[in-house]
Image (cartoon, rainbow, N blue to C red):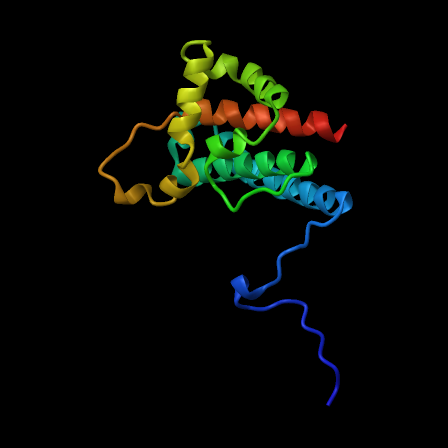
Length: 167
């Protein structure tokens, strides 16, 4: 019988996770998280280019944008040499960044806030913290208020931060 080398499993959760034992491991994972974040960002932005203002409330657009945010945050966490938790909550991921990175992202978001105060930013981020989990099932809710403008601003702030880090 020939040697068989398994490269992966069809049952997705059976596949091995990467080991994070060296700075190169963290660096590679940060790059891949950023690349995937860019892919989700591009998909979300394709719909926004339609010039139809209702598109920003489309669940598929918002889910792609908040997942891009999650991946950008995780990339920043990995770049700092920290393991990122298996976490979707944007506020908790943001809190894992250094104070300087938090402040930089906050300052990039000011134009997207109703009031340019740190407490407003914190409230908006807390409110969208679980957006990835909730918006995928928006149809199950009777209705909801969505801070779409903040989601867009937070996404752009993180995207800009990622581009600065890549240069």
